[in-house]
Amino acid sequence: PRRVWQERGRWDVAAFVYEIHNEILNFNRRPDPHAKFVVPSYSNVPRTRHVGVEFGAGAVLARDIARTAGLGRARDEFSARLSYTWSHFRFLDNRDYGDNQIPGLAPEHRLDAEVTYRNDDGYWVEPYVHAVLSGWAVNSPNTVYAPAYTLVGVRAGYEYPPWHCRLFFEARNLTGAAWVAAVAPDAANGRFFDPGDGRSFYGGVSWNL
Image 1: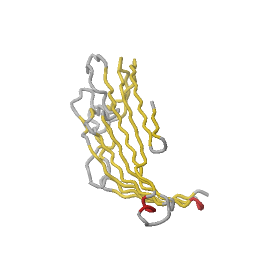
Image 2: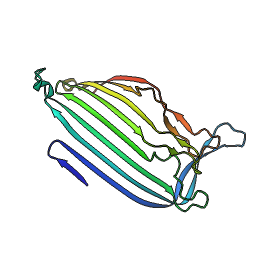
Image 3: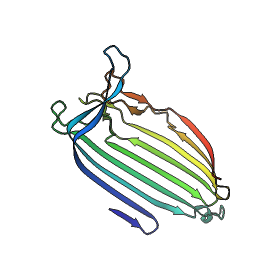
Image 4: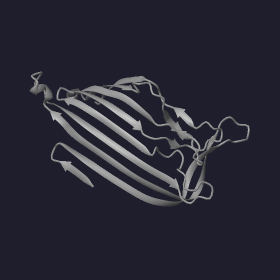
C-alpha cells in the first residue's frame, strides 16, 4: 500500500513471503586442499524460505526558509527520507543446517535516512546515515557473523540546467567506522570479509551536451 499526504509526503510498504525448492546458493571452496584462495561454487538447497518487509517514507519538512528569514528570494525546501528493510532468509528443515540463516544474502535489519536542503539557485546538500542494525551470518552453520555498523556521510552539489552541468561532492564514512563491504559466503579458507573504505572523499563534474 501507498499513502500520499497532499504535497508534503508519502510512504510505501511492501512485504513478501515465498519458499524456494532447489535454490542455487553460492559457497567458496579451495580449488585444492593447500590453496590459500577460494573460488566461487554453487549448490542446490532443497528448501529455503524468504520473508521480508520494506518500508519507505519521505516528507517535505519546510519550504521557503531563506525567503521567510529574509536571506534571499530563491525558493528552497528541506525534505527527509527514511527506508527500512527486514530480510529473514532461512534454510527450511535442512538436514545439515536446520532453520539457520542463509549466509551472505543480506543483513536482517537495514536502515537508511537522509535530509536534503535544495534551492532554486541549484545548490543542494544532503547528510545521510546508512546503518546495518544487526550482524548477519556468513557461513551456513551460523558460527561466524559480519558485524553491525553505521556509516555517516554528506553529499552536496550545484546544478546549472541551461548548461546541463552538475558539480557534486561526497564525503563518506566521516566517523571512520570499520565495516564490511562484501562477504564470501562459506569461505573454505575462513576469509569471509572484504573491508569497506575508511573516511573518503569524492567529487566530479557531469556535463550533458
